[in-house]
Amino acid sequence: MGPTLMQLETVVKDRLAAADAGASYVASLAAKGRGKIAQKLGEEAVETVIAALTEDDAALTGEAADLIFHLTVLLSERGIGWDAVAAELARRHGTSGHAEKAARND
Image (cartoon, rainbow, N blue to C red; front, side):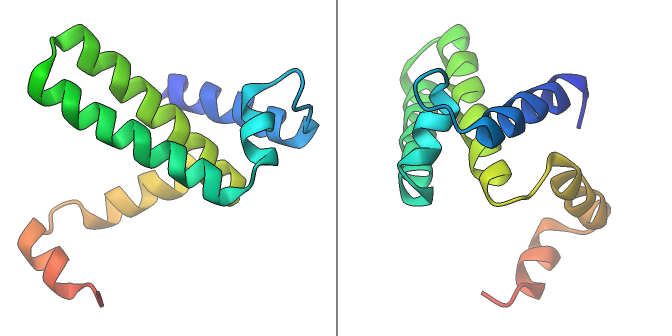
Protein backbone atom coordinates (compact mmCIF):
# COMPACT_ATOMS: atom_id res chain seq x y z
CA MET A 1 0.00 0.00 0.00
CA GLY A 2 2.99 2.28 -0.07
CA PRO A 3 5.62 3.48 2.35
CA THR A 4 3.56 6.33 3.81
CA LEU A 5 0.69 4.06 4.84
CA MET A 6 3.13 1.48 6.16
CA GLN A 7 4.87 4.17 8.24
CA LEU A 8 1.51 5.41 9.54
CA GLU A 9 0.49 1.86 10.44
CA THR A 10 3.74 1.31 12.34
CA VAL A 11 3.32 4.51 14.34
CA VAL A 12 -0.32 3.73 15.12
CA LYS A 13 0.52 0.18 16.25
CA ASP A 14 3.33 1.48 18.45
CA ARG A 15 1.05 4.03 20.08
CA LEU A 16 -1.69 1.47 20.62
CA ALA A 17 0.83 -0.88 22.24
CA ALA A 18 2.23 1.87 24.48
CA ALA A 19 -1.32 2.75 25.60
CA ASP A 20 -0.17 6.12 26.96
CA ALA A 21 -3.37 8.12 26.62
CA GLY A 22 -1.70 11.21 28.05
CA ALA A 23 0.98 11.30 25.39
CA SER A 24 -0.85 9.99 22.33
CA TYR A 25 -4.08 10.86 20.55
CA VAL A 26 -4.18 7.30 19.17
CA ALA A 27 -3.92 5.81 22.66
CA SER A 28 -6.46 8.24 24.10
CA LEU A 29 -8.93 7.37 21.34
CA ALA A 30 -8.33 3.63 21.82
CA ALA A 31 -8.85 4.00 25.57
CA LYS A 32 -12.41 5.13 24.82
CA GLY A 33 -13.10 1.86 23.01
CA ARG A 34 -13.73 0.54 19.55
CA GLY A 35 -17.12 2.24 19.37
CA LYS A 36 -15.52 5.65 19.80
CA ILE A 37 -12.89 4.86 17.17
CA ALA A 38 -15.64 3.80 14.76
CA GLN A 39 -17.67 6.91 15.59
CA LYS A 40 -14.68 9.13 14.84
CA LEU A 41 -14.12 7.30 11.54
CA GLY A 42 -17.75 7.93 10.64
CA GLU A 43 -17.41 11.62 11.47
CA GLU A 44 -14.34 11.87 9.26
CA ALA A 45 -16.17 10.07 6.43
CA VAL A 46 -18.99 12.63 6.60
CA GLU A 47 -16.50 15.50 6.66
CA THR A 48 -14.79 14.00 3.60
CA VAL A 49 -18.09 13.85 1.71
CA ILE A 50 -18.91 17.44 2.66
CA ALA A 51 -15.47 18.60 1.52
CA ALA A 52 -15.91 16.73 -1.78
CA LEU A 53 -19.18 18.53 -2.41
CA THR A 54 -18.53 22.01 -1.06
CA GLU A 55 -14.84 22.71 -0.57
CA ASP A 56 -11.62 23.00 -2.57
CA ASP A 57 -9.11 20.27 -3.36
CA ALA A 58 -6.88 21.16 -0.41
CA ALA A 59 -9.77 20.74 2.03
CA LEU A 60 -10.76 17.44 0.45
CA THR A 61 -7.17 16.21 0.63
CA GLY A 62 -6.97 17.11 4.31
CA GLU A 63 -10.24 15.37 5.11
CA ALA A 64 -9.17 12.30 3.12
CA ALA A 65 -5.96 12.16 5.17
CA ASP A 66 -8.00 12.36 8.40
CA LEU A 67 -10.26 9.58 7.13
CA ILE A 68 -7.33 7.31 6.27
CA PHE A 69 -5.66 8.06 9.60
CA HIS A 70 -8.76 7.07 11.57
CA LEU A 71 -9.32 4.00 9.38
CA THR A 72 -5.74 2.99 10.18
CA VAL A 73 -6.46 3.34 13.89
CA LEU A 74 -9.60 1.19 13.62
CA LEU A 75 -7.91 -1.47 11.49
CA SER A 76 -4.89 -1.59 13.80
CA GLU A 77 -7.05 -1.80 16.91
CA ARG A 78 -8.71 -4.84 15.31
CA GLY A 79 -5.34 -6.36 14.40
CA ILE A 80 -5.83 -5.85 10.67
CA GLY A 81 -3.00 -4.38 8.64
CA TRP A 82 -2.92 -2.51 5.37
CA ASP A 83 -1.36 -5.65 3.87
CA ALA A 84 -4.68 -7.45 4.39
CA VAL A 85 -6.54 -4.59 2.72
CA ALA A 86 -4.08 -4.65 -0.18
CA ALA A 87 -4.54 -8.41 -0.52
CA GLU A 88 -8.31 -7.98 -0.69
CA LEU A 89 -7.97 -5.27 -3.34
CA ALA A 90 -5.62 -7.53 -5.31
CA ARG A 91 -8.12 -10.38 -5.04
CA ARG A 92 -10.82 -8.15 -6.48
CA HIS A 93 -8.66 -6.78 -9.30
CA GLY A 94 -10.01 -7.70 -12.71
CA THR A 95 -13.48 -8.41 -11.35
CA SER A 96 -16.35 -6.21 -12.40
CA GLY A 97 -17.56 -4.08 -9.53
CA HIS A 98 -21.10 -5.21 -10.28
CA ALA A 99 -20.08 -8.88 -10.27
CA GLU A 100 -18.07 -8.47 -7.05
CA LYS A 101 -20.96 -6.79 -5.28
CA ALA A 102 -23.43 -9.43 -6.47
CA ALA A 103 -21.14 -12.20 -5.13
CA ARG A 104 -21.16 -10.79 -1.59
CA ASN A 105 -23.42 -12.33 1.00
CA ASP A 106 -24.88 -9.03 2.23
